[in-house]
Image 1 (cartoon, rainbow, N blue to C red):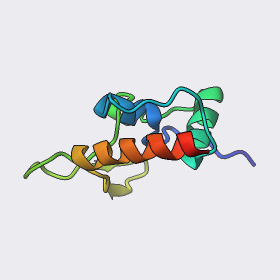
Image 2 (tube, rainbow, N blue to C red):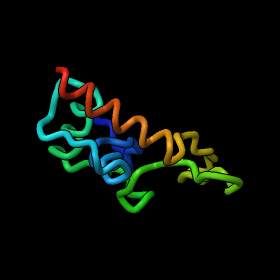
Image 3 (cartoon, rainbow, N blue to C red):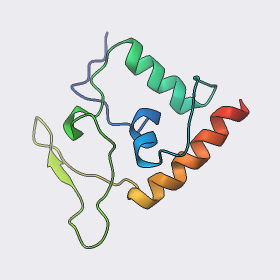
Image 4 (cartoon, helix red, strand yellow):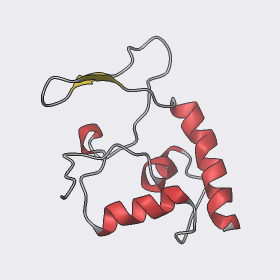
Length: 100
């Protein structure tokens, strides 16, 4: 049985790096996020298409938390870091991948 997804929601390096342009990763490392990102790209899986291919994040301030209804009627609330936390994640991601 094959598992098929309409879209995979995951913030990989390609989503985080534009938020914190000072951090760089030049090669894929052993970090699990890089591995998953490489698999998604190699297999050309739908990746963050719901977000126009960009990062998934919760807006800063008093903006409403993103909610959506999936096909079949299931309703979900997006629980994700805000931009400031993604910036911190980018710095840690860079160090983590370079150490491996």
